[in-house]
Image (tube, rainbow, N blue to C red; front, top):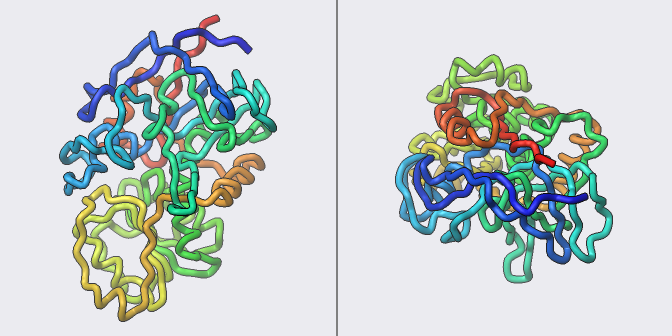
Length: 354
């Protein structure tokens, strides 16, 4: 399958606001090296991490909520190299194979996890992040390591639906897995109307847990349709010692009340801090109740394998609220930051002109 020499896409040229996102029609199409594949991007999800990385929010110097402050070392694991093509969620089609690739074919529809596990003896949770450590899906083509590419040819899901799953549902299922959530347990999900939060509600319900969700009133009905048994306002009083697990994506000043809401021996999984990364709580509430904290970024391969099974049989469908042309990424990210829509937003690159 032939491909052009140049492509259109969005270049992140520096940390900063939307002005740091520059559209280009003259980006060289990358060539796959040994063990890599070249994928034509069909759809790419919008995620909080794209905005955090653009802003430099991951820098330790930044202590406020998402959108507050810019740090120079603001990538997931330190300073980024610019220009960078962001985008960690994708559905695509293979157009070329690098040397030594086995088990994949040109023409297959594929997807890949955002957080790609690369464990080492010294770091068993080492990973690379698509669109952060290397170029991602906010362009017409993307090179991926073949070992992290998975075919979804038989899935009844649309390209946009598949592109909406890797980050949100991978993060959510990883958090539930770490918290050992099981059928019949009581689970609290914060930030429940967002991409990861809504995925956590959906997946916890699938597991058989009883879900209480924290969300704004205007999106409560949507959260309930995804399986929540109860939806409470974000600032609602919580019963103490009640939940087997808390799935937190918010952080910020209210974090201490989440600890108190967990039953003795329960779990708190954390994978976000949109209300701020600096928290304060009473350590006694943690250790006297034997509560286990889980910081959740790394996902073992079996987490994504389960999602692939559900994608392929069509039993897992994300809520895609809006689809935009890739060139309108600034508008999509503004809608994301404003929490205009529940669930996922997806970008579609322009067609390849023959």
